[in-house]
Length: 404
Ligand code: ADP
Image 1 (cartoon, helix red, strand yellow):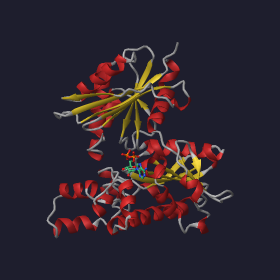
Image 2 (cartoon, helix red, strand yellow):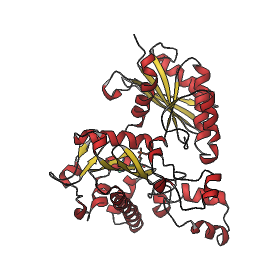
Image 3 (cartoon, rainbow, N blue to C red):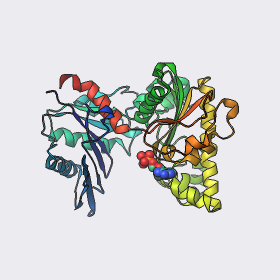
Image 4 (cartoon, rainbow, N blue to C red):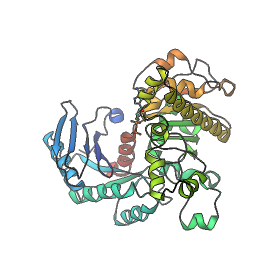
């Protein structure tokens, strides 16, 4: 029997997230196993492993490096009879954050691909090194198994130059590969297809605005299944207000902080990526907490929410103009899927654009894609839960499954 399982690995600098998925199941809904290794390299590393039938197992202690982490994951999977040596394992799919302009599609990993991902480190210093360690470790464990890199940037490589280029001196931009790459592409790709399906249309027949609102957040304009603009840029810092990132700001703020505030480039990097956005505005980055505080009349939480919504609304308007015609606006990720107040506020007042939310529909919670616009709306508004792991597994399996 052909191998039908795909292990999806998402390796961060001090963590590894994983899911083992059986591709025969509809949308791999019931994962064979999911887990997370955290605080790799610290005294208090932790592995949480949940097999299909529940019964989460937690191990704490020192997990020194990614090699030890993956070996620990392999041991947990083996306890469930799902070891990495199983003939049922078809491939490993790796999330890779930055594929630059080199990778427009998921790619089977070989030494040349690894070298290219390494070459992209200057544009993704935080993410690509960790992704590479994960890939190298997995290859060492199963050198014979096909491994596929699925890039966060790939979906956005269809952006026209008019959207992808900054209005910078061309030679300088080219010398340093400065352009807008966009991120969260795996999610935008999955949600675009799922939204078309919800509308009962082919992806090629619809224009969509996808709002991925998690701790990181990004918007994209998708015309006929292809991304034509997205809010993140050279790095994931640009665009919407996020949990801890500022999103758009006048670049002169940076010179001002250097010249007048006496801050270094690294300090400003930390300020804009880790201490700004919602947490910088009100001390909380979790939207649940902000909504609770706002409900109690907390002024800082209210202002943070208002700034978040104002930016979101500006992107909806901008992408409406970019697309000319919009069939649906889809909300996804932690905030987009759960925060009805955010969805309602983001489209409030946009009735002239054909956009509205039905309060009853918006209040319904659930895991399934659903419409929240009133019956007969000109533009559909939808909640479409994302599933990046399933998308990575699907793209991986499509590349290697045929030979399994
Ligand atoms: P990440 O970007 O880390 O993958 P997620 O997509 O999981 O993030 O989103 C996490 C965020 O979703 C949390 O920080 C929180 O702000 C928000 N969130 C989760 N559940 C809810 C909820 N019920 N209501 C409002 N916001 C929520």
